[in-house]
Length: 494
Image (cartoon, rainbow, N blue to C red; front, side, top):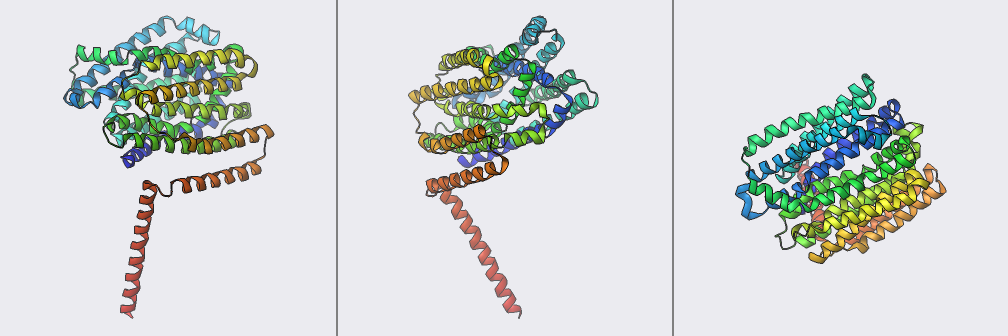
């Protein structure tokens, strides 16, 4: 079972890697053409798309995932899928109307000037994005990982080509970036309609619409809280500082998103996988091992990106963006907690206690707002980054506690802390003392070697490790046997 999860996570990670790596490679071009203020505008509009999509979905993805894997509903899957898609189309259309109607007010609130056209384009894009997320969630439920990867790669390629044309060649700035994004999402929107109708028909059920919304409605409140969580830092920066600060913050977030490649890939494979294996005898043991593996890999990623953030920025951006270095460690850890939340929430999903996600997310959102009032006016982007990290830690911690209450899993977090604490101390010292490149390389190499030794001695007797060793031994035996046959053949020839 773990082998399947690893395979699917790798495939999802491949598409995520392509997306993040190509985006990073284009960063020098974007930062050369767009100002820090332009970047800030795009980032704020991007938060509207992300958060609005989550709000419009209103838990229907979680709901469909739950019913999709229930044995008693296997034959009703087509009706479940079509009913869910119609719900999303209806909600997204309503969202577009609301955003368009209040576009001027939203523009003045976010930017302090009339950029209502940008807001309206963003609202239109949300309709396409909602179906985009629906398709890729469906492909995960179907375990069609390669089709997922192919489509996501095609989307990334189209999006980048369009962005290069409108932003770099036509020099259309923010407007060009928004148009490119809308067209790319629109293509996936059309494919989704064709794919879903052809595969599942067009039959829907009001009873299933009620069931889907009933299961997911508690997450509407969560969606509002996530809107606060995902946007507060940018809004406070725009208000207390300026749009340039938001742009610098956005570049730091782009570097931190590299951490999300592993976490995001595992999350995509994890949701359907965790529900599919809930009936296995060793399910809890698998859940624990997955969380440990996720933590180890991400700690190493956070460590490496944080230690060499300034060097990455110097390669991929212009001097105006170098100050993004200060927010990278906080945002990396924030991404870690965000993705870890989706792993530890398995107990809540299995026991259908998702109503807890409302107060958990609202509490975290309030913590984020309170901290932003205290820290962002004084510390700017660094304060905002610390706030979102603290809020995401809060949502992770509370989810972990509640999930353990209903479905206890031994995650062995002490092993994780042994790697996390020294990594945090080294990063803090490197930033505080502003270490040069060579000392950072030496210290990083030493930490990575010691971490590898620790993991080896900790898990060298585990079942998975022994299987790998046995496979290597078999390969060596085959090589030795082939070598012996070659020597015998040569001797016979003589």
